Amino acid sequence: MNRMGAVIRFTFMNKVKTKSFLITTLVLLLLVTVGLNIPYFIDKFSGNDDSGTKIGIVLENQPEIAASLKSYQDKAKAASYTFVEYDKGDAQGLKQEIDKGNIDGYLWFDNSEGGVFPAVSYVSNDESLSNGIYTFLQAALQSVKAEYITKGALSDEQIAALTAPVNIESQQVKNSVDGGSANDPKSDNEPTKAINYGVVYILIILFFMTSMMTGNMIAAEVTAEKSSRIMEILITSVSPLVQMFGKILGMFLVGLFQILLFIAVIGINVSLPHNQGVLAEFDLNLSQINLEVLILGLIFYVLGYFLYATLFAAVGSLVSRTEELGQAVMPITMISLVAFYIGIFSMGAPNSLLLKVCSYIPFVSPVSMIIRVGLGDTPVWEIIISLLILVAGIFVFGWLSAKIYRTGVLLYGKRPTFKELRKAMKAYKI
View (cartoon, rainbow, N blue to C red):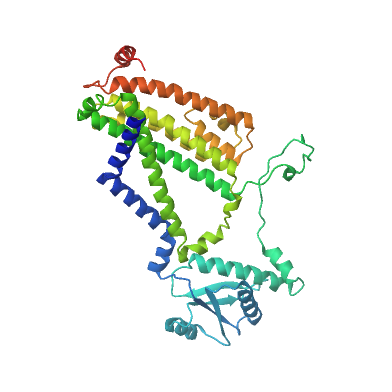
């Protein structure tokens, strides 16, 4: 155990101190930071900063609509947008107001076509409307339009209900086994929360990134040690099996360290003042996270990582030169891509036959079961069977990988054929 701990510590510290790891991690963190702040940067560089936006409305043009807009702005308490009233106005005078900075633009209503509601134009110096102004004006004018057409026939609550979008939730028909009505899906099935959908999506992305990045790092480190002949010295003090599993656990901690860094950077960026409004629009409530989804998802995530990590270590032990590593790990990379794409494109159909079949195939079951547990309706016995098959797969492929690793670390020159590898594996017992 002491030797295993020494290998884990050495693998972790040796990796996190390398320049390539530090540079790659910093670049990725920088890209995440830039990506989360792209809307803010676009508004800043394009001059479309909507904070304190003043929009002119002419009372002479449409006094009834102008009054309704002012009333909507007061009720909505939209501090970022303010309507400025003008008793009279012409195009030249309003342009001068824009040039002086008194307003950012103005609304012009054209009822020349004789429609029920006049056509609306927003006039400003910008080539196009920013997303913030467009969203605000669209919601405001939609409410004002309903009030304008009904002419006071509806109350404020009725107008709000009329203009509110209709949300359609997808429900699965359930058999009335437990006494619930078959025509009432909500009697025994709660709607899938958006936060749980996000948890599933994040777990799938993390599984793919961790298995690929840390898996390739494991294979590269084994190959580098083998090509530099350091392996011949290492095996005199530590057995090959301790080396393999020590490297796997050490790299797992490296991947976990990277994930924690990403979580910290994402948390800092979304908590910035200019991003809090965007986050509030999603109306996410962490209390809605289903602990069963989170716990089972993490279990499948960790088990899936160890399955792929053992294979990467075995393949790395067969390669004598780092130049050949990319071609050697290609089959494992393709399998992980298949699992990733099956998961991403099946999130809309968590109870599909494809995912049910994939739940019993160890290489794709981690992703499949994460989706089925988080978004679908999966019986407990299916979860247990999938877990047992996955654990059995880890033991089988772990034993096979250990045999390959034990033999491959001392095979130099060209890559051994299957026949040569089988002969060598028979000579050593695990």
